[in-house]
Image 1 (cartoon, rainbow, N blue to C red):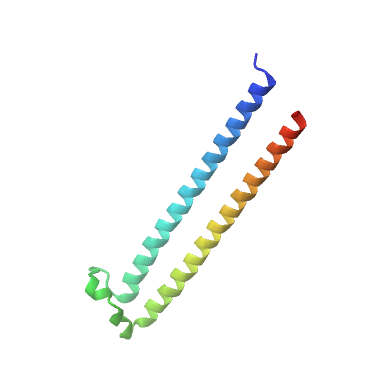
Image 2: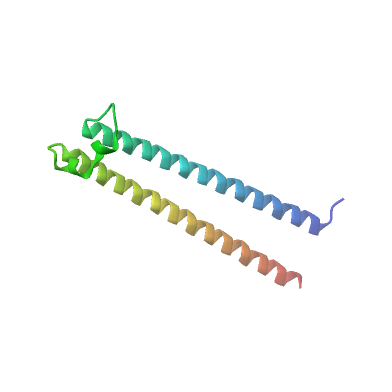
Length: 117
């Protein structure tokens, strides 16, 4: 039979493991979202510029903004900026939530340690 200290240690280890798994899922989701956004924006640049078949560096030069179809480039730029702001905001919220949870866990541990002494 396990003592109370052993059970508490196992529960703490399990909690840390669950937190790590949740963080890994969140990182994987954000990475997938970033990849999808990159692919969508790459497609949008090619579609708006009329270059569906070949994307050589010479064709994607800044002088292409002087063409009549520059509106598509501006639209893609605005959309990519909005997507970057959204992803950055999600990352900041996720990080703040993690810090709050860590502070809560640390604060809870110190309270428990104070009660046992």
